[in-house]
Length: 401
Image (spheres, rainbow, N blue to C red):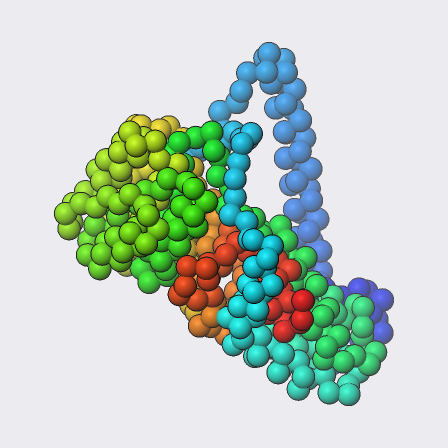
């Protein structure tokens, strides 16, 4: 009944008689704690704003000298300046309709689970406490996460409580709210064309689709006329190197590999040197994903970044984390792990077609707010596309576009 802590006070007064006293006391306590937390956060924000204003004043007084910003892990990441000339992967308008159908098909397992559940809950019923509890449970089971589930349920309660509502109305309402929640994280991968090469470091647990994602991205950019290179820096997995080489051939990309077990950082350095000589537009660097040995992996990623920065102090320009949607809530812990190792700039969510856990994107948005650049719903090259909130929300809820 988490949704009760988020509803309007006027609505809570209306339904108090329908809630057991014990549950009501728990709700009131939680609501009070949340309000106190919000007040504390607002106070902290005001202090931060005031401090920021003081800093800005000092900057002006010091003839606008730049202040050194805090760096990421081992000081390896730097904030990028705003770019003037950029490009991004954009869907062909003529193919958008086909992609929506493919996305809808790919999300069928997730959509079916939610839509069938909604139909069972809202059969000639008014929106009451019981139906709201059932809806919240359904959304949590679909991996939207408890925070997103209670927020969506509360928003529905605030607008439609004690009113007759049909399943289609519920789906449309939820789709719109999900779209709004995801709009801020749906950002295409932007390439600064004034820098050559753009270095894209791809990280993630083994099996999440790093290799396939690199191949598909390389193919899409190569099809746009860009010169791409792929470096196989997961040097302990021969199968990954072989797969990358196949993708490099398919995408007409240059390919660099080393002997099995060779130094990954040395290979990355060599790849960046070579890509500069050949005036490449984009260099993709594949990495290991052996999270069972976290310390070793952290040191390896740190070394790769440190070494390539000897050539280009701003690289990598993007650090993408691939996540497997079929792992559900485990994807959250993967983000936590890799955020400790590197400054993740964006996410690629794969294998949405093989999961009933498409709602994981809501959980990711609520907890981290990291940009989601693309999603994958199949094995084909065209099955990896830029993430769009409206398309995803409607597909997840089984709403026609």
